[in-house]
Amino acid sequence: MASWDPGQYARFAGPRLRPAADLVARLPDRAFRAGLDLGCGGGQLTALLAARFPGLALTGVDNSPDMLAVAAKKMPEAVFRAGDIGDVALGAGFDLIASNAAFHWLENHRDILADLMAGLPADGVLAVQMPRNHAAPSHTLLAETVAEPRFAARLSGVQGIRPVEAAETYASLLLDAGAGEVDAWETTYIHALAPAPGSHPVLEWVKGTALRPYLDALDEDAAADFTAAFREKLAAAYPVRADGGVLFPFRRVFFVATRRP
Ligand SMILES: C[S@@+](CC[C@H](N)C(=O)[O-])C[C@H]1O[C@@H](n2cnc3c(N)ncnc32)[C@H](O)[C@@H]1O
Image (cartoon, rainbow, N blue to C red; front, top):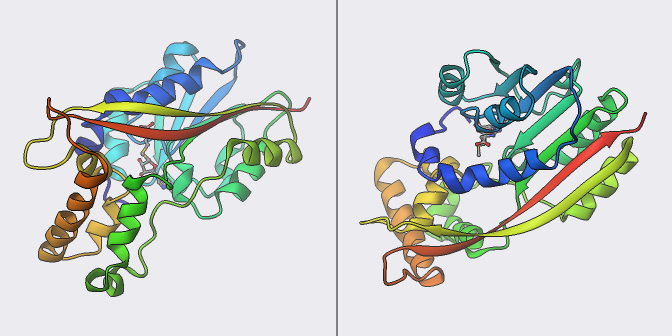
């Protein structure tokens, strides 16, 4: 998990920031004592939280040293530290826990989210966004490529993105875990991706996230073959427009849950 490439991820900084902004927009207007950003990456959500709640003490946790270095440079006033977001103990002492596009990497994220909710103080808030695009061609075609006999044996143990449930599943589990109020929703963004000469815009997007663990597991030649095979499938599913760009529908699930008093 340490091989995140902040540069590749940042190529789509605009469309990737939009869901974080939409999440922050739904946070209640009140003072918090301490805020935690889980899977903070380069500090994108952390910065939005700082702008929305000036003066709030903020901590970001991530397991990628490269991402943490970017975050620390961008926001010297916040604390950034290495940790695994599967460790529920991280939530202790915070009354605002937020996360943008990180929990879908954890197989047991439902249990972790329920435990974080249960551990919040009265009126504490848990606010999370996760991509829910695993039924879209960007992800089904990735799974298809992984299953090709020439790659399957080498990729069998690789941990990819975990399927994310419908918003109502999270609403229900958070109410069971102690939430008094839950605001949960799903949105499909239509990202208008810019041309990617010599590649395909959706391939470049996925390279920054879902494709990463698979390329890490292959040697250079096999990674090139894998990328070419995947790119061919993507090109058929996401036709390039006359301007060279591509329209890329992308579904995401959100919730903002407040702990019962
Ligand atoms: C898609 S990026 C999102 C970064 C940031 N939250 C944003 O809004 O742009 C996912 C981040 O989650 C981190 N991550 C994934 N699994 C993790 C884990 N188990 N523990 C800590 N960080 C993790 C990755 O290192 C990466 O920085």
